[in-house]
Image (cartoon, rainbow, N blue to C red):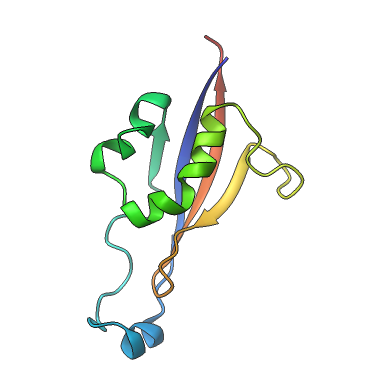
Length: 109
């Protein structure tokens, strides 16, 4: 069996009050890299090239270990979500986090 991982952008949050208080650019707004509903398919080939530079490096650092587990056919969140092949996670930007859904896709070879 071959495995892929689908990343879906569920939501982009923006906490303007925190941006106004803490950021050098208080008008930076929501994350410019992603849009809600965006879907990205990761396979073992593009995983190691961080999707050819098309993914925010900070967000990739947060989720890549779970994507890798999915690509190996592993359980992403056994016992935590109602489907062990699905995980809801986010990047670590505290003023404009992006919420992702990760899904392990199983394909017959």
